[in-house]
Image: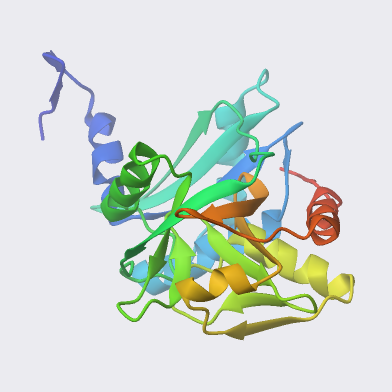
Length: 252
């Protein structure tokens, strides 16, 4: 295959990023060459590889690739580990500047959409990017996906959690079981805060005492759905964010 980019013939590996749409990945924030939930990221990659390609994954090579991408001089970064199939399986890592979770409550809108294979963090994300961009163009920070009946599943790049005053409610719907969501589930369990899965309608969000989002950037509260302000329990928000902040960082 010959590939020309901006009028120049590119090397054979230049096609791999284009073929990455046939793969899966995990995304993490690295600080001081450490990350949160490292074993969850590795488990995600292994499980997706087995399901998509019926093949195992050498997690040692994953870690070596991350270290190589960071080099000797990058301590803090946004890191993505991709696995894709193009004649054979390829593993590649991208490193970008670090990103922090927003500190102000987010504004959200909703759209009827269901991701293909929602339990896998795969690279076929055109619809996610499109709906996220359209939401931002309309002045919102994120779009939440719902069924035609209005049941919430997840955001374009986030999981959604709700607090009813006694327990954290996660939507019972097809979605990605995000790494930060998993981190928060175990932090909440350790803190003795009840959790449950149940259907959550988009119209139910104003009835909760707090709504929050999780992704690889961290945890952030939601302050508004469309034009409607959402309740925000300050004490719960402080506890939730504190639990996440106390999650240990693991050396890569």
